[in-house]
Length: 239
Image (cartoon, rainbow, N blue to C red; front, side, top):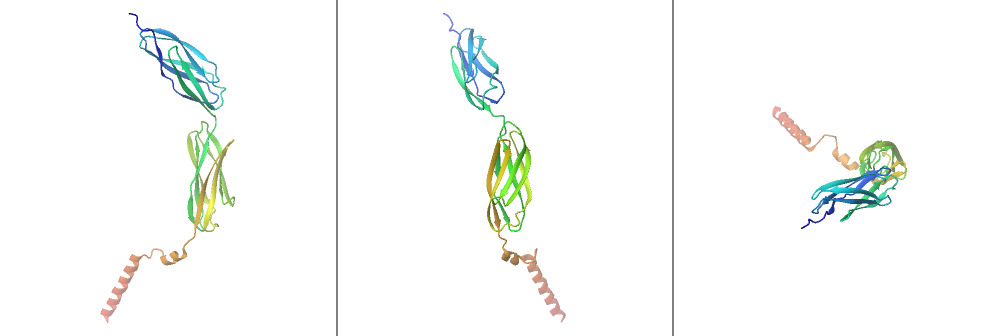
């Protein structure tokens, strides 16, 4: 009785991620589940790219990695593209994602609370989730619709973050209340921003008066009263 013919089954065909302008290798793992050695043509079809073929020989029961080298993806725009691979016996699909060769910035600005009459430090965090480094990112902090504006520049590597600290921001003239803050990061055509609130609290003068002399706590007051009592007792005994 004859053994069953070769049966080329696709074992692994994974998604691929590249940066725009790059060519790529696409790898497919194929197993011969049949009862005989065999040779078949394996076809790779990438959306908007010419179809590619390879003749592959696989012994009975063996598995091989088939690599389509330097697939001409260099002209593809940033997007997601379908990929299909076929043998005579099986087929499978995956996706090719083309990423823009650019930075992808985001900004984090947290709420802050201060007392009247004080300056403050304000941190702005810049994240770059893109595939390109971002040099000389312009970071601007605006408080109360432009009443207070400060700016700086920072470099943020790909898949990294950086924190800009604006020191001693001149908030000491602001009266009690809530003020809108906006932090903006700009790099080439990429701009990101975040909003937060600066809360200025009134200084409680009554609490200041109740506190009295700095460091004069209840414990010290008790000791002072005890000392006075002992002194009075000593004077009475001397009489």
